[in-house]
Length: 412
Image (cartoon, rainbow, N blue to C red; front, side, top):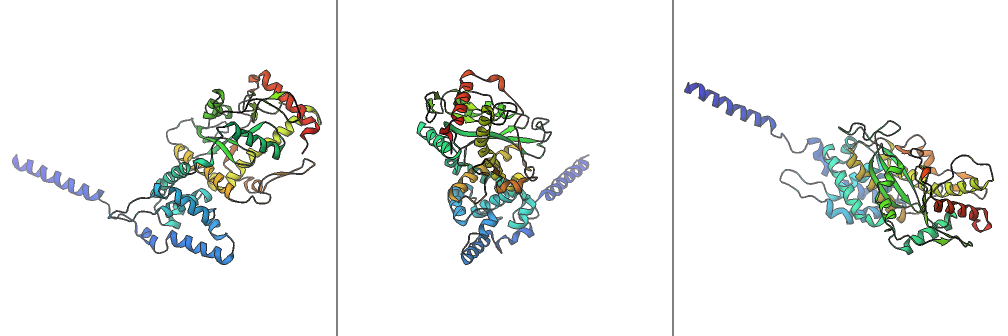
């Protein structure tokens, strides 16, 4: 009996030893990735900078990462200390420069983790973690580039710019929402399936007259409408609680009736004193409502162009994002902050946005040609028409705006 017990003990010990040996790592870094230091990302970026110096044009570096070397250095300075890791006895840590390069390449190209692994010699598993961490750091580091004004003077500056560029007085910005396509989130059921029958999260944004994001809410489940996202947003709460510090009613230029400052929305939003949208239905050419709708739609074209340019600059939005919703939210917010940062430091290119001549003819921006059939940002308009919430004050505002648009005071 004692011999049987000893035999069982020996077998058990052997099993532990064999099992442990099966779970032991054979190597810490795959041989195919060990060559990262032979031609590092730092050397690659340095070569691209030299190309730009020789050609006297910032082309090579910008083609690789979609921003200039100066912008890259600035971003590295503000996020480098947040994304740095320590070397270990088993392997050398991926440097902050490489981490930022991998993330920017992923956002600008939309390449898969396997493709990025071939370029940067970093495993797809590590790339997944790097992108999430760097995007969090970018959102935090660039937070000053996406924020709504908190003073009446700041709101008036936005309204003055809207009047100057789009001839709409008292306008504080244009807002809209988009569906961002995702791969099927694990164990999510139908929560992220939208009315177009695919998985998505919702991007709701407010933009100013100069094509910059003022506010962005990302991450709501795709089944929620534009109006629903707005109703649950911090912007709506601040608006309802009078914490946005919006200026008091002011007469339109050359007029005497005080009119509230307002945001432009589409049919998905309720008509309220601070939210103005076009009249429903079709109207006779030259009628007052037709003129009003044209001017409102012209002002709202700004947010449509911003979404188009966002997709054009960051090709991660050209196909369903292969990330869980939480990480997809972080990636989208990072793109929005980078969009504002890059735009404020770069000159506007010819035909970059929609333009219009004196006869009212609209010439599509360059982004429309590229994104005609290649965008995973989908419209949300018309999902949740809330015209029943019309208030007398809001309707009075539309009437006064219509009178202003029909007068000679509103001419360009």
